[in-house]
Image (cartoon, rainbow over all chains, first blue to last red):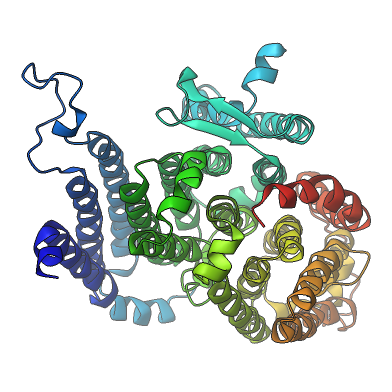
Length: 128
Length: 497
C-alpha cells in the first residue's frame, strides 16, 4: 500500500490539482473564476499525461550514443508530449472563445457575477 | 474519378476545413459568395457521403491511412456501415439547414457583419462532426470534438441578447465533458499504449480487468453523456437551444447531440464489446436508467413550456433519452432502435426547429399561446409540415418516429425490461399531450381577428427544406424495413454482440 501511494506520488498531486480546478468551475460564482478553474482543470490533465510518460532511470527521447536506438526502455515516451501540445492549443482556443463571450456578456449586462447576471437577465426584455 | 473514389473517406473533412477558412476571404470579393460557398461544399459532402455509404456497404469497412502512414502510428480514417450512415445523416441535415438559413440569419442576427463569419463557423462545425464520425483514432476524435464544440459555442452566442450567457454555460459544461473524455482516454492509453481504435480493441481483453481501464471507460461515458445531454447532464441544453438563432438550433439539435451518441455507441459496442459493458462493468444499465429518467423528465418539462423553441429543447432531452435507452438495452434490437432513432430524430428535430424559425421570421414570435387559426391561414404549408413532424414525434405508424420506438419497445421486450417498455409507452402519451397542444392551437383555435388575413407563406428557400424533411419523414417511415435490413442490419452485425 505504501509502495503504491509513494510510487504514484505524481498522480496524487495531479488529482489534487484536478479537484481544485473542478471546484472552481462548479462552486465559484464569478464567471472569470470559473474559467480560471477550467484552465487549472485542463492543465491538470496535461500534467496527468506527461507524468504517465515518465520512466525511472530514463532520459529524454533524443538518441544518445551511449544507449543507441536498441534500448528503447531507456528513453521516456515522447508521444504524450506531442499529444499534449495539441491539447494546449485546444485549451488556448477554448479560453479565447470563453473570454470573447465574457466581454460580450459584460458589455450587455454589466456584470460577470452569476447571481446578478440571472437577476438582470430576468428584467431584460428579450424576444420571447 | 478514381482519385475521388480512393480518397472519399478523407474528402469531406479535407474539403470542409479549407472552405471554412476561405469563406471570409471570398466574402471580401462578394458577400453573397459566403452562403453559396457554404451550400456548395455542403452539397458536395452529401454526395461524398452517399458514395461513402455505398462503398462501406458493398466493400465492407474501409481503412484510409492519412498521409500513407500505417495505423498504430499514423491516423487512420475508418468507414464502416455505422460511420458512413451517421456521416450521411449529418451532412444531409446540415445541407438542408444551410439552405434554410439565409432569411433566418438576416432576421435573427441584426449585425450584418456577423453573417459571413456565421456561415464560416457553420461549415467549421460540420467539418468537426464529419471528423468525429469518420476518424479511427481516439485522440484525433478529441481534436475534432473540440473543433465542433468551439464552433457550436460561437453559433449559439450570436443569437438573442441572452445567448452569450447560455453559450458560456455550455462552454464550461462542454469543456468539462471534453476534459473527462481526454482524462478517460489517458487512462486507456496508459494501460494499452495505443490510441488507434482497432488496436485498442485488440489489446483490451488482456487488460480489461484493470481498475484503470474501468475508470477510463467511466470517464469517457460521463464526458460523452455531457455532450449528448444525457439526463442529468442536460443542464446546458434548454437555454442554448432557446436563445440561439433558429438556424443554429436547427443545426445543433439534430446533429450535435447525436454525435455524442455516436461516440458512445462506437466506444461501447465496437471497442469494448457488449459482454464487457453490460456484464463485466454494467455501464449500459446505468445509461439505460438515466435515459429512462431523462425521457420522463424531458417530456414533463416540455409540457410546461410556453415557447415553442424551449418546448422543442426539452423534447430533445427526452428524444436523446430514447437513443440512450437503446444503448442501455445492449441487445441487437435496442441498437437498431438507437441508430434508427438517431436518424429519425435528426430529421424530425431539424424539421420542427426550421418551422420554429419560419414562425419567428414571418410572425415575429414562436409563442405557443399566440399561435392560432390565423397562423394556419397565413402559412398553410409550414403548419402542415409541423403537423407531420409532430405526429412523427408522437409515433403515429406510417411516419418515421413510430418505427424507432417500435424497435426500442421490441428490444425492451426481448430483454424483459418492462419498466423501459412502460417508459416508452408513457412518454409517447406525454409527447402526444404537448404536441397536440400546439396542433390544437394551429388547427382548432379561432383566430382573434376575424378579418381575412393575407397569405404570407415563407419564401421558397425556407419552405423547400421544411417540405423535403416532411416528405422524408413519410419516406423514411415507409422505407424503414429497407433501411433496417440494408444498412442498420450491417451495423448490428459489425458490432460485438
